Length: 208
Ligand code: B1M
Picture 1 (cartoon, rainbow, N blue to C red):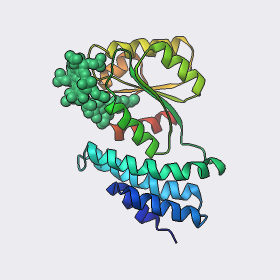
Picture 2 (picture 1 turned 90 degrees about the vertical axis):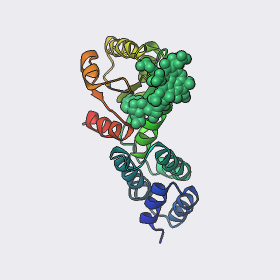
Picture 3 (picture 1 turned 90 degrees about the horizontal axis):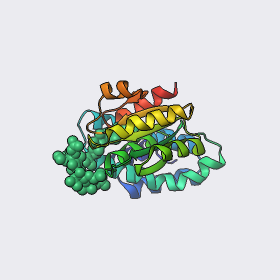
Picture 4 (picture 1 turned 120 degrees about the horizontal axis):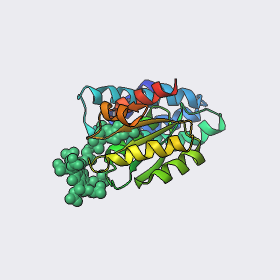
């Protein structure tokens, strides 16, 4: 029988080949896709997230683990859809207007996907109007914004206002190196996360 503990370990090690092999074996054995996802892939990413938070691993390890997860997910995704497994929640994430930094945003996206969220990538330099339009059309529960420049932080405030003016019932999470909880409170965002692993905790809390 396919070993889900070994699958989880392959994600932690970022061992793509083993992750894909075990996922394929588990699918061929007709193991439930939800079980493969939760007990194999997500459990591995959760461990990486916890270690990242404690500075026991760093960005390269997280990226390698996320890549292994992505390869395995490509095999599993059609099975999850067919089985009607619902994502934990749906988020749309972008880097705010005027800002082209996307490494942190991509890391946050990977961790959210790893935790079982469906994530819509809005890209970089995203205007308040585009955030509103995409949040509406993709029916997300959480909108995430990233900013790396002090000069683009005001775009976050404008976007929060645009989302509220549009009457969208979404939760707003913000982050990025210059961003703080105090700033999130000031502009009326619902959540702030200092790093990608905490972003998962915050997104989960916002869905409650
Ligand atoms: Co830029 N840059 N950059 N840059 N750049 C910084 C941010 C800077 C601090 C460098 C410096 O001067 N020391 C500085 C900003 C100063 C300031 O505003 N206080 C700066 C500057 C000035 C600029 C330019 C203006 C330079 C110029 O052209 N004169 C220019 C601006 C371009 C623009 O955006 N309009 C610019 C350009 C660039 C590059 C294109 C060359 C490149 C970006 C490439 C890319 O992203 N594809 C770049 C880079 C790489 C950096 C540094 C070196 C690294 C940023 C990074 O990726 N960090 C950075 C200096 C530094 O930090 N050492 C710098 C790693 C990443 C994982 O961390 O994004 O913080 P971070 O994400 C973390 C958390 O913040 C959090 O989780 C992530 C993972 O833990 N997080 C969230 C992030 N988003 C979140 C969202 C959430 C929750 C958590 O919820 C939704």
